[in-house]
Amino acid sequence: MRVQQLLEHHGITVNPFAEEDAQSDPVFKERCRDATYHPVWDKVYGDPSDPATSIVFGEKGAGKTAMRMQMSGRIALYNAQPKNSSLFVIEYDNFNPFLDHFADRLSARKQRDPARVLAEWKLWDHMDAILSLGVTSLVDRLLDVPNPSGSSANHVNADRLRILDRQQQRDLLLLVACYDNSMVETIEARWGRLRRKSRYHSWLRWWDRVLGVMVLVAVAITIVYWKKWDWLTTPWPYLVAAAGWMPCLARLCKWHFVARRIARNVRVLKPLTAPLRRLLTRFAARDIQGQPLPISQRTDDRYELLAKFQGVLKSLGCDGVVVLVDRVDEPHLITGSVERMRALVWSMLDNKFLKQPGLGLKLLLPSELVAFLEQEDRDFYQRARLDKQNMIPSLEWTGQALYDMANARVKSCGVAGEEPTLRRLLDEAITDERMIDAFGTLRVPRHLFKFLYRLLVAHCNAHTDDKPVWQISKDAFEATLAVYRRDQDAVDRGLQAG
Image (cartoon, rainbow, N blue to C red; front, top):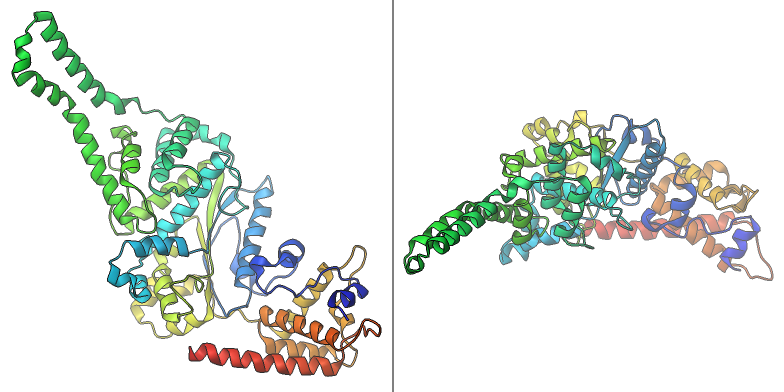
């Protein structure tokens, strides 16, 4: 007997439990993303008109990635309402590219030890990565790039570029010079297109080159007019011409060293000194003098740059920024190590960063990190102020909540005009109380989906196409549950031992 045969008999078009990861689950993404929410959803999501920080701890399979996708989807719906101000979403969930660039900056001895690499990771590195993701996504939309990076919830009207004042145009172009990380086009080409589109002009940047040319022409005219050809054998014409070019040379040297410092201290990217220097010299001196740049390993400049980014977004119609942090246990340098997860994440637990005005950080973290909170001292709690961060110490699921989720998935997969239920798939001997109690022992949605998928397969394998049985028996339910729990206990023991 085939699984699809059983499902079609009950009016179910696709297997609701075939996928276990929300990232690649078409049933969740296309059918029931907006139908089932965890009971703590309201506290985590908050009020989109005033984004706030939330910190959630949940075990593997508890639905952290699903919650991230739901938040992105709900924000997209919120942004689509004409009466609402928009939110700009930054999905900070792929750490590998940033960690790879970061590790390349360290010595060969440190690169061999992932723990030593992560020990060097600081808060300003997180801020650089977040700014890079946000700036790249924003520029993609302002330039109408096909398949733009970042969340699909982001909608920015490129026509509003023209309402930016000169200082905001400068801020945007300065952020692009430091943080744009497009893999499609060179940074200079994107910067130039954005400058033309925003109509930012900086004619005064040419004054030193014009001065050099004028001095050179003046020396040449003087020699020709007075026919003093013998002066060409003396050093003074060359010294005068060189003196005319000194301001231009001094400016190039100054911005070369600034570009070099930026390239050295933005450790999560690989900015090249020469293109960055050329971009910095395209600003008028009066526009860029004294502006914050990521030239040091500290957070002060990053906070100012983040404020500039938020100011530009506000003028473009985005009154708030939401950063969704997820999958911190998946980078290749982590390999499941709780200590390495802590090294990567702990620097973000800073109240000044988490309570930035207009910035809502949603940290979806593995439950294993909760144990480290209990070991921290008073200074950590004073710095992090977790009591103000909407913290959820455990993303727990009851048997009832899991039953509702499984039932919602079954209904979402029904053919048009029908509403199949999970109850119809199971024999009446399996009471609702027993089903809910069994689901409660599975703890998280991932285990529930694995169990139900295995149950469907086991039932179909026990019957033939000629003599189909349309309901799963109590014996099959109990036997499959016992085997699954035994296997899962063995896996958990292996992870703990590792």
